[in-house]
Image 1: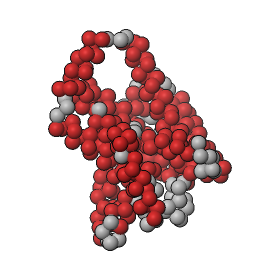
Image 2: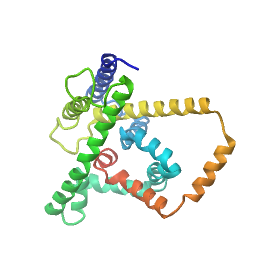
Image 3: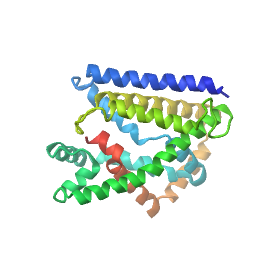
Length: 260
C-alpha cells in the first residue's frame, strides 16, 4: 500500500511532467518539421482511445465473459489496417472544409445545417458526461486500491475524483482551448497524449509479462481459449466489433485527434 501523500506526490509529479512535455511541444515544434517522427506521434496519440476505464472494463469483461472484451480493440485495429483510404478521405474533407468537430463534419454533409450540428453536439455532450464520470470514478477507485482507503478518501479534504477533474480541466484550458483557432493542431497536447500512450503501453506490457511469468505457459488453457473464441464469434461479437470501429472516428476525442 502507498501512503496518500506519497501517491499524491507521484501523481502531481506525473502531471507536472505532462505539463512540461506539452509546453515543450508548443514552443519547440518537435514533430511537425520531422517527417519520421510525425507518424510515431500520430499513432501514439490515437491511444487516447484507451481511457482510465480500459483496465477495469477490459479485465472485468474478460473475467466475466471471456473473449467478449476483444471486439473493443479488434474493431479499431481492423479499421486502421483495412480502412486507411477511408480515413485519408475523411481527413482530406475535413481539411478542405475547415472541419473542427464531429458535429461540424456531420452537418457539413447536409448543407451545413446549424440545427443538425447542435443536435449532434447535444448528443455528444449527453453521452460524454456520464462517460467522464465513469473515468473519474475509476481514478478514485484506483487511488483507494493503492492507499487502502474508501473510494473517495485521500490526503485532500475533498473527493479525489474532483481533484483529478480540476487538474484535467486546467490542463485542457492551458493546452487545448487556449488558442482561438479551433483547427489548430495543438502540438503540445498531442505530444503529451503520445507520451501518455507510451506509458500505458509499457504498463500493459509489464503487467502482461508479469502475468505470463507468474502463471506460466498453459498450452491446454490456450487451446481452450482458442476454442472458446471460435464459439464466441456470433452476431453480437461482430456487431460490437463494428461499433468499436465506428467509435474510432465518431467519439469526439477520437475525431479531434485522428482528423482535426
